[in-house]
Length: 67
Figure 1 (tube, rainbow, N blue to C red):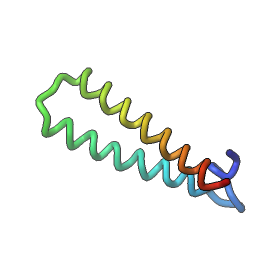
Figure 2: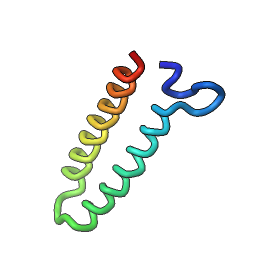
Figure 3: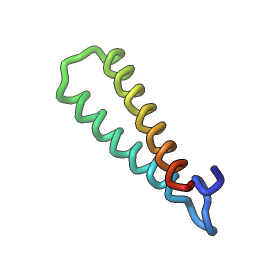
């Protein structure tokens, strides 16, 4: 898991992929919040759950890709 954060003297690709995914998820969540008429608690639960699944997939992809 060391290559995830730091690789050959620079940030690893796993960290970069996670940062990009989080930024895109933040933009998507802002768009959904502005366009949907839904209670904020329900929306946040859906967005946090989706983000957690996405982070898990990024980590899984990184682990499978480094084998």
